[in-house]
Amino acid sequence: MSLLSKVGRKSLRTRLLLALLYALLLAGAVAMLYPLGLMLAGSTQSVADLHENRLVPRFLVSDEALWQKHLEALFNESLDALNIAFRTDYPAFNAIPLPPPGAAPHAEWLPAYRRFLADTPLPPTSITLGHYWAPQAGAFPAALRAFRRHLRAEYGTLDALNAALRTDFDAWYNVFVQPPAYLFPHALPHATPLADALDAYKPLAPDWQKTLLSPEGFYIKLYLKPRYGRDIATYNAAHHTTHPSWDTVTLPPTCPDPAASPEEAADWQDFTTRALNPLWLTGGAGVPPATSSNQPTANSSLVTRHSSLTTPDLQFRAWLLLHPNAPPSAIATAPLPQFAHHADLFRQHIPELRREFLLRNYRTVLDYLLFHGRGILNTVIYCILAVLVALLVNPLAAYAISRGNLRHSTQILFFLMLTMAFPHMVTQIPVFLLLREFGLLNTFAALILPGAASGYSIFLLKGFFDSLPRDLYESAQLDGAGEWTLFWHITMRLSTPILSVIALQAFTLAYANFMYALLICQSPKMWTLMVWLYQLQQRTGPGVVQASLILAALPTLLVFLACQRVLLRGIVVPIEK
Image (cartoon, rainbow, N blue to C red):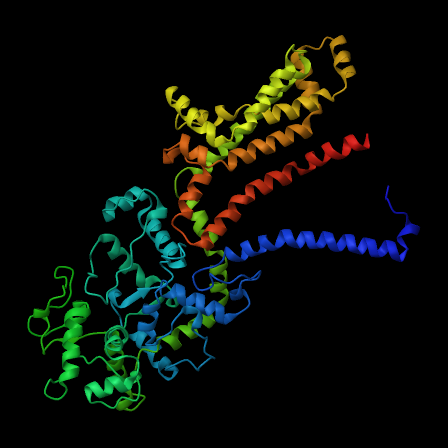
C-alpha cells in the first residue's frame, strides 16, 4: 500500500516533495555512477590521452584524437621515430593535427609513392612494424597479437616454437622480441631466429601498421639539428648553402667532394661512420654488402669516399627519375611522403582503429589471463570450495549452538566473535608457520581450511536459526524425524536467504583474496586470479590497470545479481508475514 493516496498526490506541496526526493535519488545515482564512468573511460587510455578525465573518451567522438592515438601506436610510442619518418619536430603526439584530405605535407608525391611501394620489393630491414610495442602503456597492440597468432599457426605449440627458434618462453604472453632499430649501429640483422621471424612477418602486416625507415630523416633530425639548431640559417651559414628550409636538405648517396664542400663532406663522413648502421652502406673500398654471413659493424675503416648509401629515400628518388612526372630539380629533394600516406590510410581504417583502441587494453588483460598460468582455473576451484565449506561448517556450528542447549553457548559465541577483533594480517604469519609444519603450502587445503569457520557467519546463522518456529521442529520430531532431517530438510530449507548471504560473503572473500593467497601459495602454478592481475599491474600502464579492475569486478557483480532475488525474498517475505 502506498504511503500517499491518489488525492494526496495532487497537492502541489506533495508534488514538490516527491520531486525533491527524486532529485536527491538521481544525484545519489550520478555520484555513484560518475566514478565508474571515469574508470570505464580510463580503461581505454594510452599515453596520448593519459591525462584526460572525460566520461566519453575523446577518440570516440573526435577523428583528430583518434589520429593522435594511432600515431602513438604506429611509432610504438617513440616521438623521435615519428619525427624521423615524417621529418617534423612535433613536441608530443597530442600536438599533431589531422590534416584535411589532400592537404598533408608533400601530398603531391603520394600517388608516385604508392606506385613506388607497389613496384619496389623493399627488404624487411627497411620496414618498421607499428602497433607492435607499447612500452609505457603496457598493452598488447594489434600487430603484436597478430604476430603471436602467426607464430601459433606456424609452430602449433609453444614447445615447438621454443625448439625451432631456440627460445625459452614459458607462456604465449611472453613471446616477444624488441623490434630492431636498424638505423642505429648496434642493431644487427639476423641477430636471433625470433628477430628473423619478425622480419619475415613484416611484409605480411597491413599497410596502416608499417612505415619505412628514413636514414635521411635520421640524419636531419638526430644529427644535423642537434648540431646546428632548428633554424636553417645557422646550417646555411656553417655550410655556405642557401637552403630555404630543412625540407631541401638531403643525405647524399656518396660523400660530397671535400674540395667543394668540406663541411658537408665532414658531416657525411662522421654520420655514416659513427651514427648510421653500416647495413645502409654498399660498395666502396672495403665495404661489403650486409648479408646473414657478413653482418655489419660500426667501423670507420669501412667507410671511404667511394662508399655509397642505399636507402628508401634514395630509392624513391631513383624510381621518380625512371618515371618522371616532375622537374629533376624537384625530384632531387623529394621526401618520402609518409605523413600524407598514413593520413590517407588512417581515414580508410577509422572504424577499425576506433575498435582497436576501445578494446586493446581489455584484450591485453584477457590474453594475459588466458595464456598465462592457471589463474582462472585456480580461482574457480578455490571459490567453489570456499562456498561449499562455508555452507557446511558454519551452519553446522550455528545449528549446534542454537539447538543444542549448550551450557556455555553464550561464552562460545562470544569466543567465536573475538576472532573478528584480530586483523587477517596479524594471523597470517602463525597460519603460514602452522601450514608449513603440516606440509600444506601450495595446496587448495591451505587456502580453504584456515577460513572454513567464520565467527561472524556463525553469529548471523545462529540468530536466524533462533527465529525459526519451534513448533515446526516439535511436529517433525513427533513424526520421527532425526536430527539430520531437522537440520537438512527444515533448517537449511528455511534459511535460504541467510545462506545466500553467507555464500556471497565466502565467494567475495575467496575471489578478492590476494595477500594471503600469495603468502600461502608462492608457486605460480597455484596463483589465483588476483595474484596474476597484481603481476600484470606491475608491468603495465594505468589504462591496462583500470581495464583489469573492471574485468575483475564482473564475476562479483554477476554472482550478486544471481543471488539478488533470493536476498530480496529473504527481506520482503518476512515483512509481509
